[in-house]
Image (cartoon, rainbow, N blue to C red; front, side):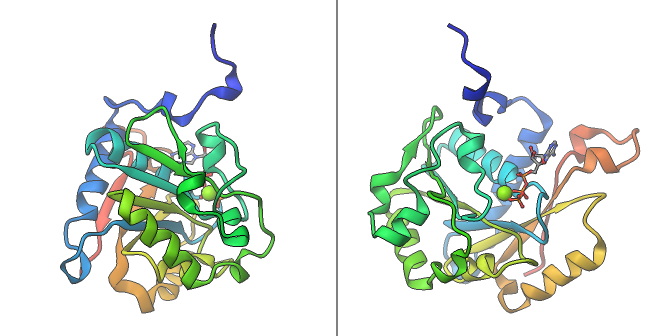
Length: 236
Ligand SMILES: Nc1ncnc2c1ncn2[C@@H]1O[C@H](COP(=O)(O)OP(=O)(O)OP(=O)(O)O)[C@@H](O)[C@H]1O
Ligand SMILES: [Mg+2]
């Protein structure tokens, strides 16, 4: 019986032969290029300056790429408790996730959701919070991430944007690195500069910038195969 449209998951759109797939592999390769302090970058935050730059989508494709190509036990966590998206992308329940761990002290391992992709598990956001910054104490985040590092080789964390809210900076304290998504052709330069300033105190953790939407913003003769996504490692 054919599946209903609403059951479609982003996994169904994960084309391992596509040029974008290559770019996601490149980003992952660079993630562990020059780890800070010689350690591995096991927990990586994905954020952007503003709303709707493609954080959740890119985070999901990176997680699928890690599980599929690198054969790494990968966990994707939706730490965007305001506008959660990962459960929609993977067609799973929102309930029983991060906010439930934070408010009810449920053990993280009890609310992990498996996906159709071997090696990829999810921690959804749980019930939506209007002011999650209060909930996001570094001790609680630390506890979740440290426990998950025991089970997973890579933990990718989707988050809200940097300019409007504090959440990503609170999360970043407990992460080994951060990837910044920039939507080409839409996000203005001064907005990106402001995001860079916000990150200044944690700049050693910035692993790179993923430019989204280049196909729409470059002249038509550019080859999407080469320019669809571009990852630029920052100087350490
Ligand atoms: N490269 C792309 N091509 C086509 N559509 C895209 C692309 N990147 C993102 N989108 C679409 O743009 C919308 C926003 O993407 P997404 O939810 O990943 O952004 P976000 O930065 O996580 O947003 P939010 O700030 O709300 O968390 C979604 O509908 C997504 O499918
Ligand atoms: Mg999002």
